[in-house]
Each structure stands twice: as structure tokens, then as C-alpha cells.
Length: 81
Image (cartoon, rainbow, N blue to C red; front, side, top):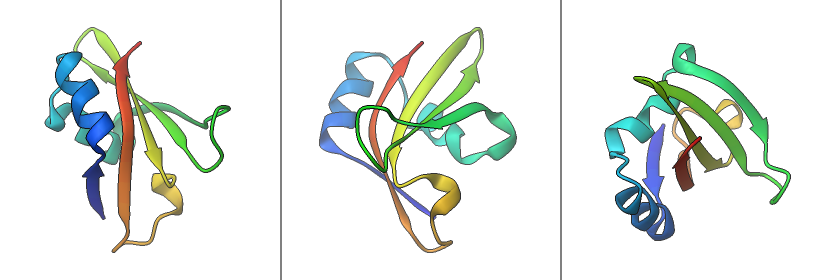
């Protein structure tokens, strides 16, 4: 699976002090605390991972679980919860 960070997401993660390495944590299944389909946009999924004492939310399209092994997952945005 390949991770693509949209230009919007790249701008947001830089503003919010989030590293690309931290965003990549959503690919480690046992690190995910929760995931759910976004209520705001069909096909987008929200994942929560714990980074130290903080919770990081990462929004992707499509859902990681639904993607083929050679698929590209696009990060729409990421933010601290």
C-alpha cells in the first residue's frame, strides 16, 4: 500500500506540528485505537492513533481496510484530538 498526502493535508500537518512518520502510524493496525466512516464525506475514513500522550486523527480515502495491497491511500487531513 502506498500513502499519498494531499497538498491540503501536507499544509495542515505542518501547521499542526505533525510529522509524516506520525501519520504513517495509521498503517500499523494494532496502533489504531478506533476507525469510523466520516459523517462529512462519503468514502472517507477517520483513524485514531496514540502518539505519546496525544491522540492523532487521520482522515483517509479510501478506507485502509478496503484497499488492495497495491492501492494508494490518500490522506485528506490530520489533526490532534
